[in-house]
Length: 319
Image 1 (tube, rainbow, N blue to C red):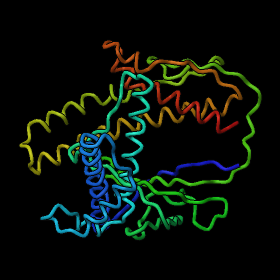
Image 2: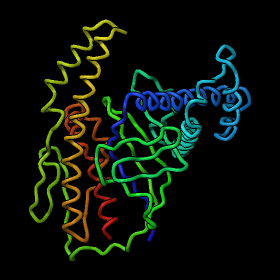
Image 3: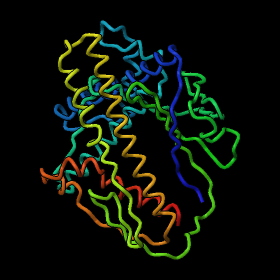
Image 4: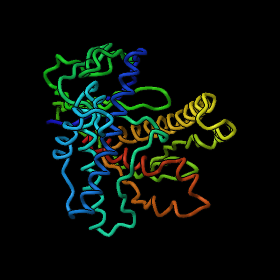
């Protein structure tokens, strides 16, 4: 059967490639913000908003205009896929917003403008994408070196078709997520064994057959370092180089916390999915539980919603 999978790994770009990655991320961010402003203005004026295709055609015309006339000539130096996929993501964001409004959800989630202060972000590329054991070939970016060897599926495999590549930045590091369509055998469930799983704060997950997976409490363990880094940022002059370095140190601390939490969740959910053919999990209203101010911080640190999400797709993937 055919399944969709994503392979995520870290890139090792040189200085020239890092500049090109920043330029592509900037093009995607500017296109998203420009498209959001155009949609808002058009809806206020006519009651209708342009589609992603209409916005992309208009953006292509603006690329030929000089900067003084409101054009974006610098976008010609980047792949056309970066702004095009950003406008498609904008369309998806509006579709989800209107769906939540129709369902009467408490959180509507109107699309927000992307700020460089909240992070560099990323972009998505389509087209001819080839991967080898040590490098990946991306449109307009060329051949980029990989930090992890032999992880991405190579281009000569007949059972895999590469769909797109998403490049993101986090704490000064660049990551590639390769989305592929892969032909796999029908999954065979493991030996018949039914397990119930209880998630919580004290223990990340406890199974009915006695397995206990500890909660690493990643944020609690790094809280002092995060607080010191945050104080260092607040003491620096806004816009200075020293403040930028302090922000980078703070980002690395949050990145470390996220990795510790992610590693514990993946290990626990993979072990549970491998050990049973039927897994019963709680149907928790995590968003409602976060309303308890005494438990909100600990609940967020445990990331219970992510535990349930990973269990659901890993158990289904194993049949």
